[in-house]
Length: 437
Image 1 (cartoon, rainbow, N blue to C red):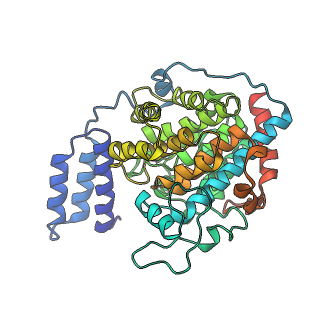
Image 2 (image 1 turned 90 degrees about the horizontal axis):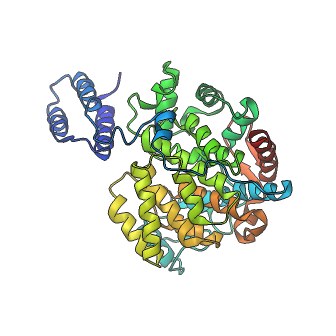
Image 3 (image 1 turned 30 degrees about the vertical axis):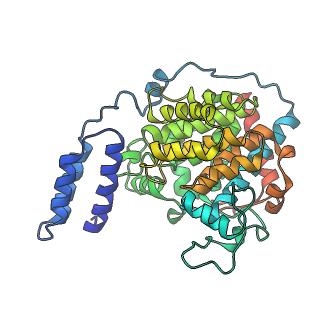
């Protein structure tokens, strides 16, 4: 039985989710406030009934934002669906190694400030005597001034990093590799679900993934497990699971997006699914082209053209041509997408694009801008770093970013506790040969 206080949080988030979908929630919001104000009611029963009413609200964007692969493909713009892969084995190995290193480095940059705002980060850098755009791992301040936030962990800061610490942003990349090694590229959503239950500790998954995990234990199967009492279903959780599929399908964005869909539909719907498909397809394209805008357009071509995420992508491409300064562009992101939850897909995807578009060929600037924008900083640093690392290759990544990792990645995924990043890249190369062959 769900406790009334748990119901209140679920309904608050569900009302926010439905408003973001364009639903008119005014009357339901008033009923919610009335129930909260009457403790003498059987609140659990009242909230149960209210939830059913919220679920039944019509969404004006329902047709534009489908959640099945067939319908998504029917509403996507033209491709290309596959690009010519003209790389030697050594060149592809270097790119995949760069992707793993870039993801780990970007994640480590964002970990100490996860959940911070841009203003929080600005204040910390100012206090550390390093104002301006974030350009290195965060320095540790031993005596933080009163009123200023302290970084989450000293071990994740400049001069103290010894390896890529455990994070869900890399746990899922490892899990994707394991799924591809075990089941091949034609794995099913049920294969992914069973792998979660066997390989992931429940308390090390969060928001949409935790709800989906609970639903799987209750016996719900994909895709039903994604939507049952899951107000987080358009948050960033699927987007951070994209990388394994993109790495495995170099030059084949359609295949990468298809595999991403089969993973995403376990826990997400609509833009939550599109975020994973978009990133996976971008990664597939980044293996074969240096053109940042072409990489972004390739990713966008795998999601519905009229979706909110696709509209945000268009905005970022337009704004990056109109303003030279990334902070001016960030202001536009804040104004248009700042109403989303800090862990939503759309606003955080915009920050990933901000890093890619303004950082270009400077890896540190790519991840620095993506993290400096705030919100889900470790996720955004990891995704931007992954795309930049795959595009550039390991040999072009600066030593100050990858050296502190010591080629080591930690994880809570069963069977992957301590890993050499170079070994993971070699295993990914073998998987990619199998997929593109």
